[in-house]
Image (cartoon, rainbow, N blue to C red):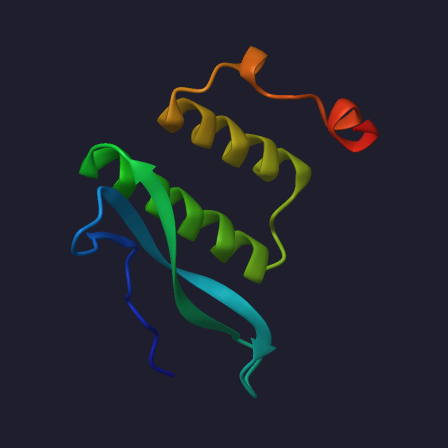
Length: 104
């Protein structure tokens, strides 16, 4: 079996100030041997520096891999969100609680 060695990356599209994270996302399908099938996707990381965009891309890919392997637990999800907040420099007071969001 050949394993893919793709790594998350970033790109700056022409005429754009926004970096884009390029990473693998599970499709929900599996190969006959049971391995998850991935596809490459791009998500904007907004304007900012390249190193922060790359950190986000790597974090997205790690979370997607855990989810595809069915190991994305509540603890992993909380860690993922904490990493995103740290990279994006969002304080916990800037985040709306889930109950308030759902009520709105």
